[in-house]
Structure formats: C-alpha cells, structure tokens
Image (cartoon, rainbow, N blue to C red; front, side, top):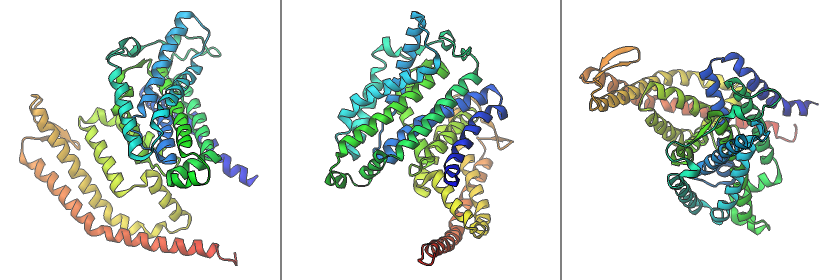
Amino acid sequence: MTSSLRFLWPWLALAMLFAGAPQIHTSGSALTMMSVMGEMIIFALSFNMLLGQTGLLSFGHAVYFGLGGFVAIHAMNAFIRAKVGVPVVVIPLVGGAAGLGFGFLFGLISTKRAGLVFSMISLGLGELVSSSSFILRSFFGGEEGITTNRTKLAPFFGHKFGSQIEVYYLVAVWCFFCIAAMYALTRTPFGRMCNAVRENGERVEYVGYSAQTIRFIAFSFSAFFAGIAGGLTAVNFEIMNAQQLGAQQSGVVLLMSYIGGIGYFAGPILGAIVITFLQITLSDVTNAWQLYFGLLFIGFVLFAPGGLAGWLMLHRDAALNRELWRLAPAYGMVAPALAASFAGAVMLIELAERQLALARSEGSAMRLFGFEVDAASMGPWLIGLVLFCSGVGLTWLIWPKVTGAWGVVNVRLRARSQAWASPSR
C-alpha cells in the first residue's frame, strides 16, 4: 500500500493541479496561456523522447507538430462539410496519426544514422517541408494558413467547446494522458534500450539488438505525440500556418528541453511552462524578447547543463538531508551581485533596443524599471554599465564561496549514502 501511494500521489497531484488551475486563474488570457502550456508540454516531452531518451538531436521536430496540426484542421473542415458526427475530442488523435505516418516515412531515412548525420538530415527535412509550405498552397494555405471552426463539429455530451475553459480542459485531459503514456514508455524494456542506444549504440548491436530499429521506433513514437500536440494547437487556435512547422518552432522546443533539463523526465515539462510564460509575457514588455531567450539558453548550457530540473534535484537532495542551510550564507552573499549584473544587462539591452528604435522615429524617451529615462543621454548607459561590470566582478569574487559550500554539502551527502549502504544497515 505504501509503495502504491508513493507511486500514485504525484499523478493525483498533477490531476488536481490541472483541474484546479482555472479556479485560481480565471481570466481568458490565463486560460489561453495554460492551454498553450499543455500543448507545449506534450511537444517538449515528445522531443525529449529523441534527445533525452535516445540521444538523437533533431533540428526539424516541428515538422511533425505542424503536419499533425494541418492534417487535423483539414480533417475538421472535412467533417464539417460532410456533417459527420465526429466530436472535437478525437481530433488530436487525427493529428497523432498524421504525425506517426510522416514520422514513419521520414524516420526510414533519418534514423539510419545517429549523431551529427541524423541532426543534419532532420534539418534538411525540416527545411524541405517548411519551404514546401509556401509552394503547396492548397494544403498549407500559403502565408494566411488554414482556418476552421471547432464549434461546428458534433457536440461531446452537450459541449461544443466554444468557450476557452472547455478547450483548456480538453487540452488538460490530453496532456495528462500523454504525460502518463510517455512516462510509462520510459519504464518499459524498450525505454531502457533507448537509453542504451543513447549511451553506446555499438554495445547494443553486440548484445543482439538493432540500434537503427530502436531509433526508428522511438522516432515514430515521438512524431506521434508531436502530432497530438499539433492537433490540440489546431483545435485551440482554429488556424494553422507555415510558422508552426518551421525552424523557429523547432528551436523553441529545443530551448524548452534544454532549459528544463533533458536528463530528467520532468525537465521538458518545466521548460515548456517557463518558456511559454516568458514567450507570452516578455513579448508584451520588450521588443528584444528573443535576445533574452538566446542569452537564457546560453547561460543554462554553460552554467547549468542539468537545466531547471537538475538544479532543483540538487537542492532537493540537500533539503531532504537537512544540509540546505549550509548553502544559505553563500547564496545570500552572491544574490545582490547577481541581481546587479542582471539589472545592468537588462538596462544595456533595452537602451540598445531603444537606440535602434530611434532609426524608426520612435523617440529616445522610454520607461525602465519604473523610471522615465532618455536613451540618448549618457547617464542611463553609465549606470547600466557600472551595474553590469560591478555585478559580474563581485559574482566572480564571491562564487568560490558558493562552490565551497556545495563541496561541503556533497561530501556530507556522500558520507551519508555510504553509511546507509554499509553492511550493518
């Protein structure tokens, strides 16, 4: 019973979170954001089936997301014209089937090789489909895309999914079951073999398995779930366009997985939530939001390769062993320096963006951190430069104390683990 409860409580908590979130955040914009988060969670987890589980870095994963969405939206229009009693709840399966079909087709080519060759093939296929979207206008709709009306489909127990709250719960249910299915897949012998292929494909061949076949099956599963995410996107926005299968969308899912942490199952979930939130909110605050994403990605790759999930797991282990208090003094010392460097960097970026805006005749006056400043004067530039340089310098001086604190914590954690593993235990 204890083992069953230990296994079930995270899933019960996740279900309660999905069910209760609209009761806390009731606005239409919040419901739309949470719906997009659910779609991106499925998309990011499907990408991590390739990268985190099987070791395949794809630069064209948005192809299966986009094609799944296009096939789903065409299916919706066909069902509406034919007046077929198909409810909207099954449309994501249409997208998943399309993603699986295209994944099967393209996987036969791309999974023959791994590593850099696979990445370049995926990039080539992605660019091929993306460029074709402007040629095959009857299917992709050109720059305008393809639209539909989900409320004209057959109702599902009286619900026609006209309101955003109904769409949110549709996305939440699909997201929950897709998360459970992908997690279950990682716990199967096939999931373990995917990990073996990631670590050493030649050894997998030596023990009698085909690494290419395992890559192909993982690729097909990944395309299937990406297609489901695309189908949900088609239902949510009632439009699909060429941008949703291009390189930018593939870059976004790569960003989500790396920032969340590719070494943990929950990593892409965290990354999808954080990046979607920043993508929607930052774009309303600054025109340089894509630059912030690039800097964030570089920062995580250089200084936190385990991502958000890895960083949280380190602190979780320290907290469970009552060692977290040893880190507090060092964190307290370095926090002001990090805050100063962050504030200085933001000031310099925003002032530079405003200087570019001068060429568009938007003026030099701007509001920064609640103050009215003039980007054409030297004062704000000097303040930003001083904050950034002093913050970076102080961080460089203080950071050895953080490293030393973690060294003490790691030694104590290692000693405790060895004590529990001793024969007397």
